[in-house]
Image (cartoon, rainbow, N blue to C red; front, side, top):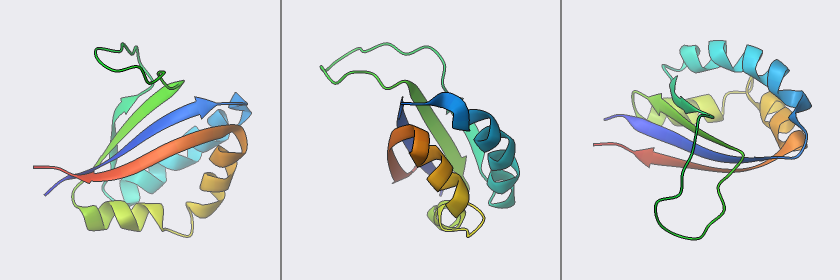
Length: 96
């Protein structure tokens, strides 16, 4: 069953994005992940929560693949890089 990592990113300092973007692709591929959504136009249809700077949706073959990606030691420095320039809400959701 597929799994989705959904991230809402509030940018403080976008200087991390170029390095992160270059290094995240091979790591996603290693764990069977791919981008479904990366930034793009957003529009609120319901609710009052402010939109994030960036919305990201990643698809993985299973929850186990997604967890392995997030907990991969190679990803740890990228998490710190991302957290240095942004606030992120990241959830993992099992698909149907």
